[in-house]
Length: 61
Image (tube, rainbow, N blue to C red; front, side, top):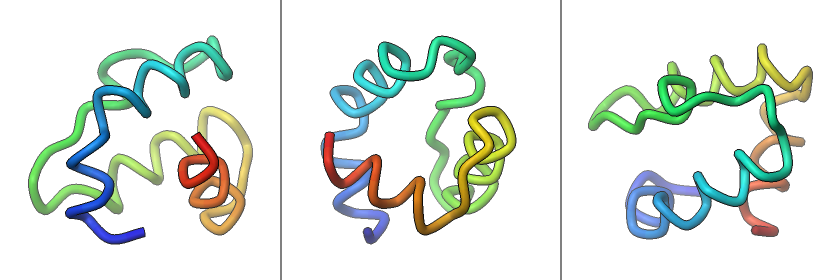
């Protein structure tokens, strides 16, 4: 999952992640240029998944 793919559909993916994982907030899912890893780390900490598991979840949305 590269940054361009993530950024392009992020609004849709963000909504689906919030539906699937109610513990996630808008702040957790805020995408900032150059901060992709930081954002993914916040999401990982909240949902208790590894980076690989999280990437698979996002790609499947």
